[in-house]
Image (cartoon, rainbow, N blue to C red; front, side):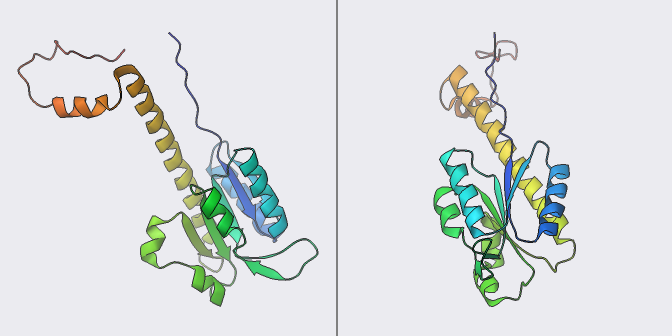
Length: 194
């Protein structure tokens, strides 16, 4: 009997940041912390948007997108704009974790976008000031935790689907309700796992 096992897809991360040193630092840390991770980068809004569009068109979504809060529009522009992909990620990639980072956490626009702590815990958005102690390590730890949670959900969903295929939909609910005390001897179970 062969088992059709679908493995967890390799996590994909996009870093949109115009400081080359920050990109290199984060790439190295992410590759050491997350097995089989693929890390892409873009230096400005146009490059970042092109990579997001390509990922969406190919249905190979990014697991995580790390954004510098203010970025130049393209390679010829010095003008920086904030939070360029918020609409795209919220509408088209709702399960992608978005991490915003900035070297100026006191910036008025950044403070306006940063959620309160109550919202922070439940959202797929995390905000880091680059002035925080060990901010890069904390950012990488948040990425690794998110990938691990997605892996756990992926495998539990696969197990549930396999279980339903073998025993019928929601049979796990029936088993858990009927698994209380009974007069049936343990050796005389009506269901068995193959």
